[in-house]
Image (cartoon, rainbow, N blue to C red; front, side):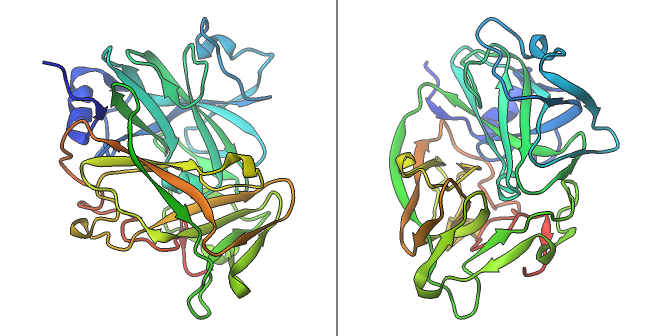
Length: 341
């Protein structure tokens, strides 16, 4: 009997871990397997690179880590500072030995995107980022480029996540998301990242005073100007709900606009925004970066779309059922920050 196609749920991910299809240098931790994804952890070794790269179809990543590309090696034990504007590559603790009918896709975790840390997973013989083909066997690495805040990283930090899929990608429906710039009294409609802020310790949720990193943004008349190169946290006007039988991914709605990017971290798990899981009214948080010229963004302007996909089976623990930083969220900064900006 053919196994059902779709995104693999937590129970299947647990089974793959038990069978050796997902292995790790250290045992998987509680909470590492999510409803439709598995968090990937930094290992000990990292490298500062001159530039990003892909290994290509004939080479392993390790074969490219020579003097022509690597500036120096870092040991993350005890913590290492990853500086803004620099490109790093880090080993991940997890490796894959996937079944012949299962492929993988990777994405930054929500907190990573909200920190403006650009990440992409690279596999051996890869011709594209954030993808592994069906049946892939080998290690995983993550490219890390902090854009606004320098970060302190250690082994075990979870910056990215993997979603495994049986069969081809098959969208069931889409939902267009627009930006909420209407405002509620004097409450901010978003936040703009401050340059030259203190270091963010990835292992310290709630350990950073938001006003040192963010300034509130208000939108008189329901519009703001996105400045080139600046990073903003905004929220969708629409409430988002991901039924327990589906998962979703955020995608650009109109790349040809070209003047802003409206999401880094794109995975939405089954149960997000579902009333029964405590998520009624959840908004999508938009990580927005201005590009080449100042750009006017107006209330209700479409900025992204959610692409829904069928799960391959029932989820044992929907999103939010065992606690979550972002269930029932409105406008919300990364879990690393505390206090109103």
